[in-house]
Length: 501
Image 1 (cartoon, one colour):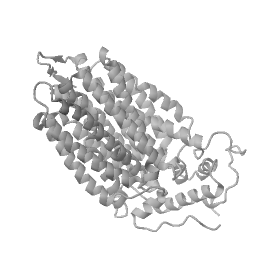
Image 2: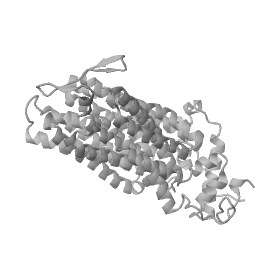
Image 3: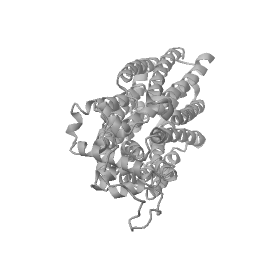
Image 4: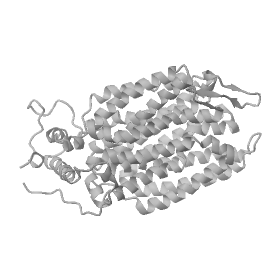
């Protein structure tokens, strides 16, 4: 009988005694610790992407920017001696350099996580987060700021693949939705924290401290990762079944642990020879359509345009202080609704939340487009328009948070087979960051050409098209093992894990 099929006795530690040295990831405390530490990557993801929306109001003054008598920022930036950029385009580039790094990280992150392990990958990510935060806050020139933000972006891209993978692979299937969605909750918490810090430091225009403060959660993540174990699924795929069994059996019965090990082992035998080229085979197509498709819809509804540029767009209407306050409220709603949806996703299922929320996103975008028609070119907008913009922005972000916000990272962590889950998930993440980069590089330019009304109308059309796609393609994954989900997407019957020795 093979090691993977051998009935298990009491958990043993590596020295041969009873397994009592460290809480297993199957235990409530151990799972919570591992999830919490990994999800700090999500907090850093949110903070580093969100803080730039506040910082960009102030850092141009440190690099030669001035405001003319009409209140327009005048700033000509010569980056690396290669290109000279005007104010809006320079801001778009500094915002987007993080996304360029994230794109590279997403492309490479899955392969790294598959080769060296999920936990080891996250240790490297946290170290880059730590160094990048300090360097960006101390940047003496715009070029140094750009390079440090590219490095931070690389960590964000890798963590956007590795964090959901790690949590999905340590989580029991009946709690996987809530635990994986902790990553998205921490992303929203990071965004809210960045808005809170930005609002608090606005009176002193402390953009450097805004950026440096990201070093605190990065250090906590780095320390915490040395206290948690590797993913059991990754261990099994790499022939380290005994280590995976020891962790699983701390709270599972012997039969439950052996059932999981058997399913993973059998699935890995089928998928072991998968390579990058195999991801394009017909058998992988259903999973790829779902994973990449939801990533595309997630970005085309414009959420990151709102996250990055809301203060800049609204400051022309309300002034800087009110714009930052509205942005702070939007960030709080994003976090609060994510928490509520996270607590219910394993009860209500993925499809109802994602489809219903995407419809609400489309409606909110249409209303926003209409409201921006009522904003005059000069002077204050009518009260109904001013209040309406703030309220509908909150409704929009709430609908997104409960649907596509949770759905992107959760679905991408669930639909792929274990041996290539890292590589395959990185494709969805890559699509996400590529579109994010393209949108961030052009938002202010588009607003300058067709106005905010045109921008939000385009996003609304994409939301309706995305809803039609998800209605047809999105599977319900609630309460199913990762192996069962993949078999069903490929149209194969799921083999019963029940077996006889």
